[in-house]
Length: 321
Image (tube, rainbow, N blue to C red; front, side, top):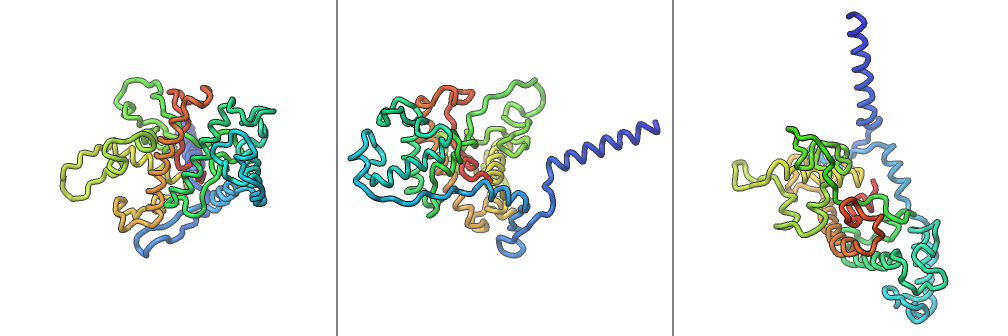
């Protein structure tokens, strides 16, 4: 018995140590005031995580501008989207896209060798639509991308397919019990930073046309002290929390980056960044509905998800910490 108790204590201590290493950030922790004094609006970060995020979010050096030559459509065949771009700029864009999306495969990733005008490869048809999506994002969604804008590299980072995308989740097999597994909860959710919140917070908010609008689905908290007809459930609230946790981890920030924790729903007490995030939410759903989902039949079957759906975007697709 004398040996058992110390052994149990040792094992328990080791378990706690492993748990702490896997869940807690290594000191030092940097805290920066980002709002009025006394409101608790503080940005919490770790120098190590900040340095890592900075390293992976460095855009490659841009190629020199070249606006020489007649419109590309007058020189090359089957140029549908960039036909009015000068030939020099068109060549610059094509070379850049190769570096951003297919640095190993080169031009042949999208084009048929010896017949660049051919649309035989699905990758070319997808790339054409992605160019249109990029133009649309930069032109229409300045409320989110501001004057910075996006390019193919923003999502692809040198990969054929962006690393951070999502598919509709398939309910994994589980035993019948008392846990709330049927609501998509009570198991580790990678999308919600490893919590037991719903493991697919994307489908309800980032694709389709939610009944009553996505804003009505997200706003689950009541606005009065007494019941006033708010029919939102705890489960619906958990879906919102799962989505918000995904926002936070995608940007590498805490909740107070956008919200004042005394009243998460109050716009007047939130930071200006919440407005940018609001437009980003609607932008992402629009991109999925209007660009990604319609390409389902175009993509190769092996690139579709378990339910046969196409890869879709969320905040992490672009931001990556």
